Amino acid sequence: MKQRGFTLIELMIAVAIVAILAAVAWPSYQAQVRATNRADAQGALLGLAQAMERHFTQNGSYKGAAAGNKDDGAPAIFPTQSPLDSGNKTYNLKIDVSDAGDTYTLLAEPIGSQAGTGNLSLKSSGEKAWDRNLNNKFDAGELCWDKVCN
Image (cartoon, rainbow, N blue to C red):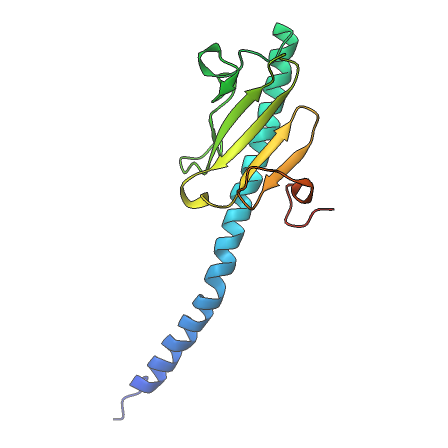
């Protein structure tokens, strides 16, 4: 009676093939997770913008929408982190209201696994920017939320 099975060489070849596939797939997976987290933050900024508009309708100004009835900082009228429905937070949300109280800039700053991927901003005028270079300039080449500006 002859036993059938895998030789050690066959097993090592199979392990090597799996390792190569994992080495190729893992970076793509990580990039997709970062893009998904960024999309969640973009949605959160749009939701915060709606909350800011409700605040303006009720108060006649954007002032006082941040925690402690302040004009700048974490929002008091909306959750302070994104994603809104998950325990694994990847962005802090912040408000910056103009001195006159008639305009605002919303900011999503990456934290945790998302750190270093660039800040997202949304202005009351609707202008969206992604500071991919982390230079806090949001220059004309970065006036979009996508990888490629249209």
